[in-house]
Image (cartoon, rainbow, N blue to C red; front, side, top):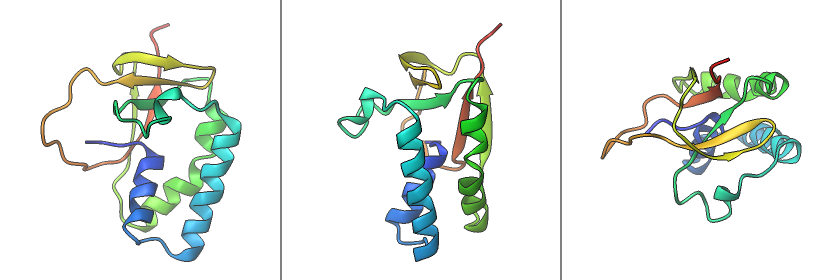
Length: 124
């Protein structure tokens, strides 16, 4: 299953692949985002519903602040896609910067191939 950029970096950390310097970098960026954005309620239980967060089009400064994590994924050879969609799934959460969605379908046994940065771009 594709995951967001933060989840991809968490996977690298949990697997013990990050150097201490890169782990510190990830922690600093992650902490900064936690302080800058509202915390969606689906994370309260560890996101058992497997909601996927997407950035809204107006979150350009936040998306730009992802550059250190994009670099981290690049350096560790993790494939990375930026995905934009006018209809990413059923919206279950929304704030000024992001939405949380339940994707319309998940294939059984889907394997993570490309971590993604999701950007929600509604029809204008």
